[in-house]
Structures are given as structure tokens and as C-alpha cells.
Length: 332
Image (tube, rainbow, N blue to C red):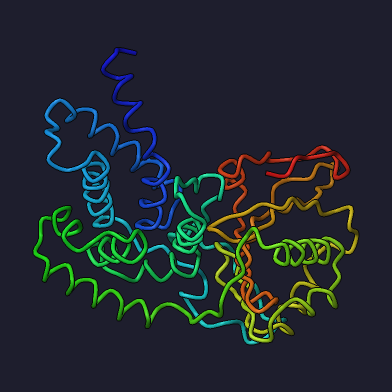
């Protein structure tokens, strides 16, 4: 690597994680976000000799990343969750659809990739809140420029002149885009109670209770944790369930009765608690099954998004299979 490349990497590496989070908020896919960050840094490297420093390096990188995201959104479909595609199943016995692979599904963002250099706890909490699944899902309904303005202003707390300079538009245009984005977001985003933070010991206890109940097929225990109007969805399966009773009856028919058939590893995604589940096959090997991202409010579970995509496990730095459910696997 040349000295110039080393200098460029040294200067830009501190922004890599926040650029990834920004591109993820724009695109709703961690894989697409990683590709766009690579494209951003490559474009920046090629243009670095002409960088005159009229704006900060951070602002310059965000300009490149924003333009790359806006171009990508022109040719990509909105990423969805099942609850944004159709109505809930009419009952726990409703037929479960086959995975719908032609839909662009929302993807979870591992907390391990959500690294922040924020100096104070309040900023860290705000950063986590800015990646919650409900917000990312709602952002998908905004046009690209509205999406960018809302993220920059309301999530990253940029000032109007900074956003106007980045997008090469007037202050009035920024304010107009922001107002329209906020209005559309209020219509698309569900109202949530105050959420517990991932570090909250009460939340960790709730996550442990859920993981134990799920592994043991303890339907009574799950019922105690689920809010009456809880939602359970399983992308890329379009069928989803509304209400604790329907969810419990559905899970009772799906979770193996033998706890040895399930292995659960606690993790975190989108600033929320999560679990990775493995299911034992006929050969005795536990294979990656789902990443379940949980939303807690008022000491209850209000939503479970169970991503049925084993390819996500690599993103969480988790193995695709376990030789034995009793093996010690470190929690991320």
C-alpha cells in the first residue's frame, strides 16, 4: 500500500461505521449498505487529490454516500416487512405461505456494526434509536431525498445549512422536504411506548426469559411476556400474526417440544435485543434458523421479527451450524 493510500485510510477509517449506519438507514439492507460504503470510499479515494477542504472530510464523505444511495434507490424496490405487505393471518391455524423471494425484504443491522464515537450516553442512545426496525421500516416509504433529509436532520442532528450544502439545495427546500418527510413518517410508523435500552438489566432479564421460554416451548411463559397486541412476523414468509393468543398458538405448533432440538444465542440488532436460533437436523447438527429481533415496551414484548434467513448469521459473526447443542458457544 502506498503512503497516499495509508494516509487516506487513516483519515477515512474513523467514519466507516457511521457511514455504514447511514447507508443502512437509507437502504434497509446491511449488505447493500456495505456495498455502498465501499463504493463511497472508492469514489472518495479516486477524487481525494482534488479535495480542497471547503467542507469537512466527514461532510464530503456523506455527500458522496448520499449521492450513491440516491442513485441506488432509483433502481431498487422498497424493502418491506410482512406487516407492510398484507393483513395479519385470520387465525393461528391459517396456512403459512412459502417464502417469497422476489420481495426485497428489510434486513437487521447487527449492533456489533453500530459502533459510535459519541462522547455521551444520550448521543449513544439516540444513535441506537435511529436504527430501530420500526423506524427503518417506516423510512422505506419516503422518497430518497426526503429520506436523506430526515435522517440527516432528525437522526444525525445536522443543521439546515449543512444539509442544504450537502444536497446543493436551498434552506427552504430542506425545510419543505423535512416537513413532508415527518408527515409521511407519522403515517407510516407505529406509535411506540418508551423503549428500554439494550444495556438495561431489566431488558436483559426479559430477553433471557424469552429465550428460555422459546427453547423450552413454554407457551405459558411466552404468553406472559407478549403484549396483548403483539406482532410476530417471519420474513421472507408473508404470513404474520397479531395478538398474543394467536402468536402463542402458532408457536405451539412450530417450536420443537424437545429443548435439545433448539439452541439459542443472545445477540443484538438495530439497538434492540435479539436471539439467534439453531434447529437440530436429523443428522444431529444444529443449523442456523432465524435471527429474532425483539421490541420491548412497558416490560412486555410488543413485536418479534424473526428473520428466516440463515445467510444473515455470517453478518452477525455467528457460525452456520453447531455440532452439538451442549457445546459452549460464546455470545457476541
